[in-house]
Image (tube, rainbow, N blue to C red; front, side):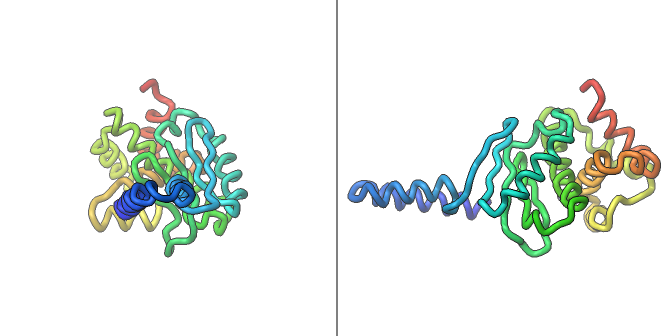
Length: 201
Ligand SMILES: [Zn+2]
């Protein structure tokens, strides 16, 4: 992200120098800043900005459909969803209110739902944190009580640096995909999440 901001700043600097002598160049450079790359589209739906290319059309429609199945409350922390090309074996990344999905169309539908809901789990946690409505120490305590792990990925993060944010995102995803399994096998996490999602707060 820092590099991107740097690059944008550099482009702006070069525009202000070009601006004085050549209007035409100025216009095409501005277009580059706004679109990041040419051929990038934006749409705004339910206050979420989607950034995609023509080839991402199908992925975009799937994401809109998966989003429709989630309650409004858990989507309030999402401001942007970007579609990008394959990046190693990373399927998605969340930074604050922004989600990046890499090579989304390459996955089967159940994995796609998991990837998207996992990332939304992060934006939901970020939003609750911002509103002081999430006691993460409490979540860790609850997750430990279950004496279980939700995926190899989140298990690794816990073992390596006691990081439970991936576990939270996995639990969130499971809540919407396999609600009964979460309830049966990871009861404490289920109750905690159920209260966050359906509780009065
Ligand atoms: Zn994650």
